Length: 194
Image (tube, rainbow, N blue to C red; front, side):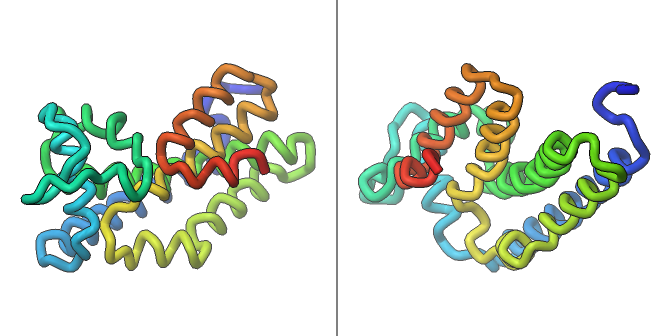
């Protein structure tokens, strides 16, 4: 019997784990930011996003370097409205953290959908979500992140969303998420068909 979004104590436990780790990582990331333990990449990204928000366009730095020349980070245009809420480079850190930890929740619900009727599927899905969080590439990338923000990492929840919509046979959200993925980085067109 389904009882809505949260239907077991494992759902609540995973939400608490994700929230706790997100909060912990946010504190660490803000500490690192305040003590200049990031590379300049985050500030290049923020400068371009801030200039888009201010109506100047995708330029950054004192010489107004055009930032869409190396990679087509069109996602900057979707991130720019968030500066209305919090016009500080820390917003990019928060967006990164929210994306990765929301991805663990998507992994959990995706695995529950895939293994469906298997006995103990909630436990297996919970373990898969925790394994996702402690995966070395995820763990190292977010707990020891010298860059603070990389647009590529924003694709994770959207790729998982594509799988969910594909399983549910919902074409319109599938196409929307595909377009968002392509707006993150042009190289993802090579991964998307796989």
